[in-house]
Length: 255
Image (cartoon, helix red, strand yellow):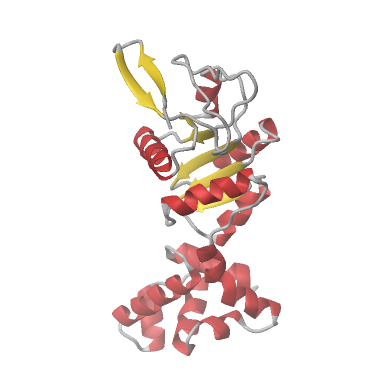
């Protein structure tokens, strides 16, 4: 497939890049050096929003390498995209938030703003966290998919395609991590008994009460290092990254 040649006016260096529709059967779409979409009919493209320049560039290149038929326009914010004077709305939007949480006020507002402005363009969120609670919150704000950075570039590309086709992507890892908890709650069983060993259940209850490792070790007559092992196992089973998340998830699913 021949690419359109784009000339950088500042450096006078010509470079060639592939810029075509998300649908492989569509004809090649072109993008002028001024960032105006010039097709006479309609242009489909992925709008990649990421405030981190290096991450944005790397992800854009990786997606193009995996799927050469992917037309990508990147921006560091919605305002940056607007300043590019693109004549057509994106077919799908990928908002990368990095290590931020969906529950952060600015993140939630950004998702809500995008879904409100682009009613016909699905918004997919990319983040470092794969917590089920964060995913559900993103969907609550109107997102049509959630891509954790733990997935491969292939899965990410397919998730984007699914959202554009009208589906909703949720990572399987997050669902599987919560499967036992959901099963316990739906069957009326005690979550701790279902998920944890007897000692892990005691440690989990102590974490829920905010007790320090030394106190837990003293009360259970264990070495502090053993308590830390139990905590690591609990975090793994709950797909949590710290003690605060452990307490939150136990409280969320047990009570």
